[in-house]
Amino acid sequence: MTFIAFLRACFSPPGLQILLVLAGLWALRRQRRAWGRSLIVLGLGSLYLMATPQGAAWLLQGLERYPAIAEPARLRADGWQAIVVIGGGRDHGAPEYDRRDVPNYWTASRLRYAAFLYRQTGLPVAVSGGVRPGEVEPEARLMHYSLVHDHVANVYWLEERSATTWDNAVNTRALLKPLGIDRIVLVTQAAHMWRARVMFEHAGFVVKAAPLDFETDAARLPLLLRFAPRAERLMASSQACHEYLGLVWYRLRMLFD
Image (spheres, rainbow, N blue to C red):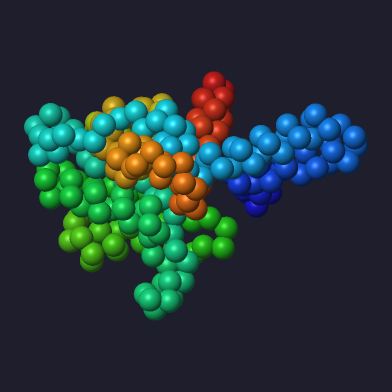
């Protein structure tokens, strides 16, 4: 698992760009000047573009394909049966919370929106998230605690064995299918929704996408600022690359499932 995570980091920004520049320097040393210069320009140029709001928006446009829910209060009347929130990670030993693990930014944002949908609809909520190496408490329990204590929302089901989006879909299906629940409102970030929806539909659910945290709107910025490099935009580009790679991997996996 650690080695796979290392490889994934190497082939995502900025790791990929560092490899391109190193390969370019090696080519220059081997007197392959055209190759060396091309690789260095490609590495530095792509690093710059992915660090800009416009470059990140171009990458994310292909992922953020589902609109925000327009009338959440109608979800129950339209036949949707439950709200499902999948974990997005945790902050380990947060000092401001007595060294407890707590939901990270991505998960906390999903929980806040799920609580909003719960108040609008009264639909029951399921949370899904397990443990990874070095962790003890399942992420679903952290999510349950936050929903109940921070957002005053009831959680009906906890799925505590998942480590990936694939696991989230398969294990949540096993939990809810015996209860006759197959029409769900799926809550996750807009950039992650395409991959998550594919997985949950493959598992057997009918899915209503409930995306949040849209990041593609660079048009509101002045033209000059759209191309000003920013660290958080590089992180967004890196996440977009992760999603595209994940889509390819899961599509291949589905062929043999």
